[in-house]
Image 1: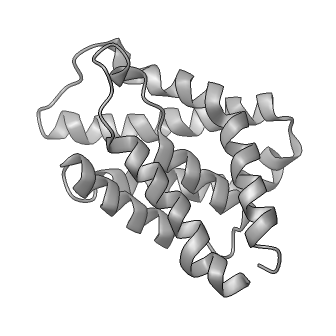
Image 2 (image 1 turned 135 degrees about the vertical axis):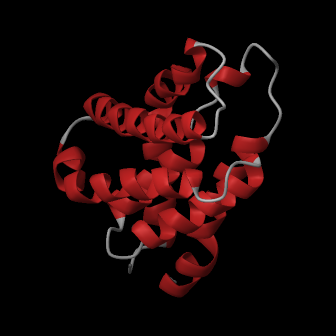
Length: 161
């Protein structure tokens, strides 16, 4: 069962997160799109830190760069950075109730968006408005649902990892 989880189930959660990231939304909802890939990466790096870490984050970030048409390595660098911090803090974060975990995840996602914004600034593409930061709020609100859902997947398919 562990090999199936490594080869199929967990990568499927990343594919689903990537699909949710690129699916079209109405104009009013687009700025509030949660950071699906980053939240998925943070969950798996905290749940299985020896299996999903910085290399996985870099690869997921490259896929995200290609999907969004961003500068290659932009999201990869940001995901690798927050995954590194998530790995360093995962034992502390996991001890907290979900609402406090959401605050920690929000802080990590704020750093993620800050790194992406830094690259945008270097390339001369500043954000259009303060709504650039809106995904932090939507991601924090969805973190308990993401956590419970992915924990259910892990318990169902990844018992021996």
